[in-house]
Amino acid sequence: MNQIQIYMPPPSNWQDFQMLIGDLAKVKFIEHSVQEYGRQGQRQNGVDVYAVDMWDKSIGIQCKETKSDGLTSKSIDKEIDKALAFRPKLDLFIIATTLRINAKLQDHVNSLNSSGHLPFRVQLMFWDDINQEINRSSAIRANAYQVFQEQFGQSDIKNHLAALKKAFERPAFQDNFLHERNYDDFENALVLMKALLKTGFLYDNWSRNLVLQTVPSSMIGDESYQKFVCSLESKLERIYQSYLSDKRKQNRNPGQLYEKAGDYNIKRRSLLDFLNKKLGSLGEEEIPFYY
Image 1 (tube, rainbow, N blue to C red):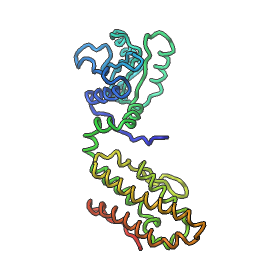
Image 2 (cartoon, one colour):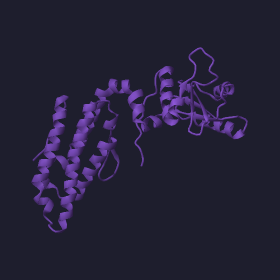
Image 3 (cartoon, rainbow, N blue to C red):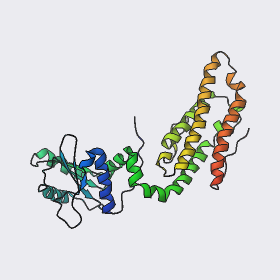
Image 4 (cartoon, rainbow, N blue to C red):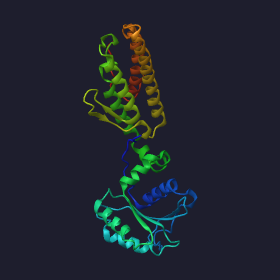
């Protein structure tokens, strides 16, 4: 299953970057083997973080919190030369960097690996790769990005809530259910809204073009807001399951959905009332409905 990737900003200093790489190493390799090697000013032989994998292979990681011109083919060669002196001998030498993926540097490392002249394999780990690892681990997100989430949590909540408001301002939720003439459109609207709450993406019913994007609520560092979204999601799911049940009864009773219009008005009004209460608590304009 595809995973929606959320872009995290790189740490602004080398200390935090090295700690982050250490945390990632504990997830990827044997946790108790991971250690930050040496300290600033000590001879480290090119290794900031040392680890052992499940096959007892030695892993050395050099952390490069750097600007766009701070990592070159020449500087990579220098770090490799240092790592040659590391003990125990390395099986894999990783250079982790805050740089975005760079094909020229990848080609250089691929050439070194294919030459057969090195006693270990070299791997570049760009910020794009690191970001994927962060997205895979909720523990890393909570630990390494707790301050980030707390600092920007309120703005994230307002942005997320604004996206929900825009998404729910549609006939499928605002109009009297008696006016619904295409039940497939109503079902599609429910499915798309369920997807929005899960992924942060909302697509157009017809064109399937992206209408809006926000962060999934799971990425917002506010437990009470996440509970709010879970409750909203549950209300939406109950409407969806009720619709599927009534749709199946249409074969025996063609007027089933028409007869249940009042029930759908009550269910949808309950959902919008719940959302409007949250909007009002943050001083946002509420969503009107016409039934």
